[in-house]
Image (tube, one colour):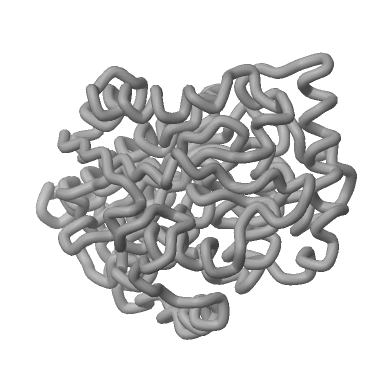
Length: 359
């Protein structure tokens, strides 16, 4: 396992909100990149199905493992599909709305947990090592939290676009599967506000306990989500504007990582509610923009199930986890590896001398 703590300022000099950083794509360019995404590789899918039909098992008997093998081949654009280098990318950011008491933990926990990741002490470290993957931790200018979105946009368009561009840097050559996660006190409040902005309904529909809030803190969280969408009503008509209005540096960076993975032919495993929300922004731009993504696990955060339904996803695992930090996605790497081991390693009826299905 290789774990690196990186500052967002490494991308160009002065942190998420500083001047003089390297320029990435603006919102118009991001939309064009998404519009120009390549179609899935149907030849790789057909080759996968042909081999699957020859394996020593009844057709369809491995269920979703067969679908996963197809999915990896489709987006890696090759057969046989293979994952020798999986990466868990965890993006960390701070949220101004956290000052409103919407979390059970104070904002300084974000930086403290980043150090825990770097030193190898978090759950995601153990799960990443078990999955034979590497871990990268990307600090998104923790000393400069977003603005309180109950008073106006959390981010300027420029800062949001820069965070997306920074996330795109996480997909390096040689990575064959990317698991995307996050860390940030207040980010389930931000995720709930994004979902409320994208899909409507009542604010309470999208708010859950997050780190374990209840009572007055839960009421404050609902009120913050409701206020954030109302105050930024003029930005709610466009998905990227919703992201900048009530999102966060780490959520925008996850969206960037998902975009870059599509460009590089890398399938993506999403973690829980917050990372799925980052993908939902792209889905709202183009419903096929996240076809290369699977949700790794169903979070115990109540709105995650509803969000998965909105984007047409069935999570691979449902273990009542709600930790974040990429833990569920890291665990799901092993499911993907199992699917590929069966597809690539099983004998065929011919090679094993086993009689096929009777006519």
